[in-house]
Image (spheres, rainbow, N blue to C red):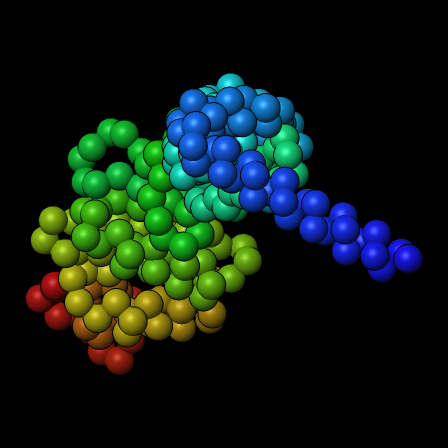
Amino acid sequence: MARVRDSAAHWVGGLVAVGLAGWLATQGPMAWNWLDRQVPVERVEVTGDLDPDRARELGRWLASRIEGGLLTVDLDALRRAAVERARIRQAWLRRSGLDAVRIRVERHRARARWRPGSERQWRLVNERGAVFRPQLRPEEEELPALVGPRERLAELHRRLEELDRRLGADLDPTRVAVGQRGSWSAQVNERVRVRFGTDHWSQRLERLLQVQSGWDLLERRVERIDLRHPAGMAVALAADSGQEGEGARPMEAGGPPPTTRR
C-alpha cells in the first residue's frame, strides 16, 4: 500500500512540474519574472580564508548589489564584484537552497610591494607573484620592495624568494631592484646595499654567501657590498662603524679584483 502511495505522489509531483513548465512556456517572460519574485535572495554566505568580520561585511555588500531573485541572479557579475571589492584572488559561487547564494573565496596574501622604476605608487604582489592594487595598509609599507619594469616582475619576485631562502632567518632581503640597463641590486635588513651587476647573479650570490658564512659580513657595520668584481668584492663600511679603513675596500677571493666591472 505504501508503495502505491509513493508512486502516486511521484506521479502527481511530475504532473505538477510538467504543468508549471507548460504554464511558464505559454505565459512567457511575465510568468518567469513572477516566479523569480517568489524566491528572493535573502542572504549571501561567504566562506573561505577571510576573517569572520570581513566575510560578513562582504556578504552584506554583495547582497545589496543583487537585482532580481534566485532564478535570475547573475553569479558571474557577483564574482567579479567580489574580486574587485576585496583582496580576493579567486571566488566560486553557487545557489544554496531557496533563498541564498554561497560564495567561497581565496584571498590574496601580500608578499611584497612593487613599482615600475621611478613611479611613486606601489602595487602589492601576492605569494604567487601576481599584482593586485588595493590601498596599502600601514603594516604593508614594511613589506619588501621590488623595483623594476613589469616585464621583469616575475624575475624580481623569484630573486626575492631566493635571497629570503638562502640568507637565513636573521637576514631579511628588504629590497630587490633592476635598473633600465639590467643592473641588479638588493638591500638586506634595510641597511646593506648589495650590487650584483648585470650578469652572473648565481655565481655572485654564491660568493656573497661563502664570505658571509665565514665572516658574518652582513652582520658587521657594512654599508655597501659590490660584487661586480669577477675575483672578489668591494666593501664599504658605515661611517659610524668605528673601524679603520672606512669606505670601499676590495676583499680578494682568489686574487686582486680587476677594475673592469659589469
